[in-house]
Image 1 (cartoon, chains in turn red, yellow):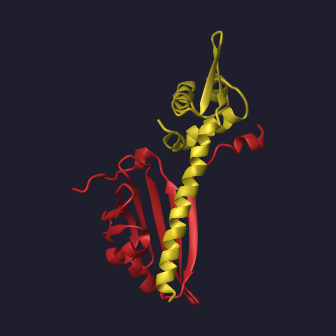
Image 2: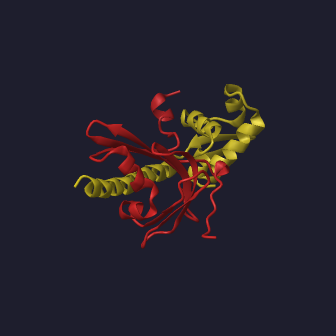
Image 3: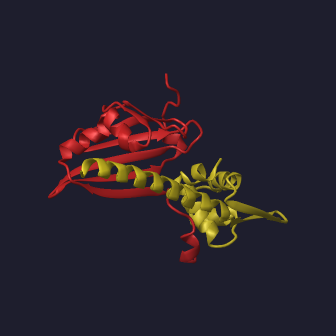
Length: 125
Length: 98
């Protein structure tokens, strides 16, 4: 089989980003798990309950509400949630915070996940 | 089933990769893979529903070939989600690096 033809079929798509920040990891962590602080940079009003099975909500003015659930949490180090809009594709977001010589590093990965393993409520109740 | 859901299953992705290698049948695919012909047919139906394969009937044979156009949705998703994170992280950096 032609490799170029095979390569037309992608793995489940994912987006990865890394950013270095000039604050200690502990301070950066607060900007992830404090809804008020996270709302400044996440692009909408962010609600986040930093505990296993905690709720994640992102409500931007010009976009559908994104509903999520925290799936993994290592306090101060990493958080993973699954979220989706009512009609959108479910995705998993993983954020890792690490100390660095000049402050800290944040690594974020968002990837599509199969519907069959998604258990995200899509109501505000 | 949409293209993202269709691609969500690793076996289905492998079926599609093999279809991308050239028109083939469910029977031929089952001979190449460790799954039954019925399972292959089920995956091909899902791929057909998502518009990712084209069925061509020739006599009693049904051959499947790749329809690549829907895969552009995947590129669109990566661009959209990537742009969103770029904007978020730029805002975060502007707030914390002061």
